Image 1 (cartoon, helix red, strand yellow):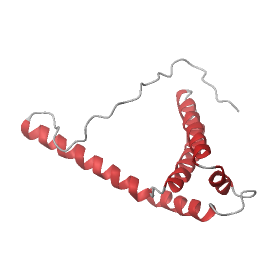
Image 2 (spheres, one colour; image 1 turned 90 degrees about the horizontal axis):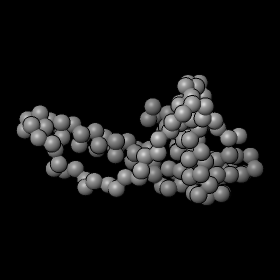
Image 3 (cartoon, one colour; image 1 turned 60 degrees about the horizontal axis):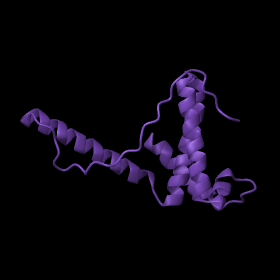
Image 4 (tube, helix red, strand yellow; image 1 turned 90 degrees about the vertical axis):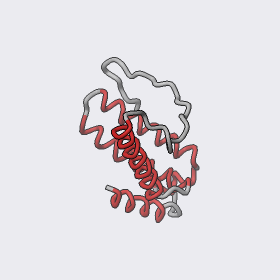
Length: 134
């Protein structure tokens, strides 16, 4: 999967300076990071709604849109896919080290972990029949 996202990232970089009249990517870059972030949020919400409604095919389609818009935002922010992969690997190693320490010492791992981050409240998605706006 990382190869696919790397290719998508390179395609986004190649398209960012094309004519905005003919390139969706160039149009997003022209409109700036706020518009990019809005599109990303819209796609994320669509994925969530489709998942809650059990529409697997729509989840697949909307997930592709979500990954595209995430890649555009990464490119605008100067983030490369490998930066994200490194962070994921760091987290995986940290979790593995904590599990091993817990197995050996029988206690929770705190050493080497970053301080807790203030979390946003979780909004529950309840009920049936959530619909997307079009």
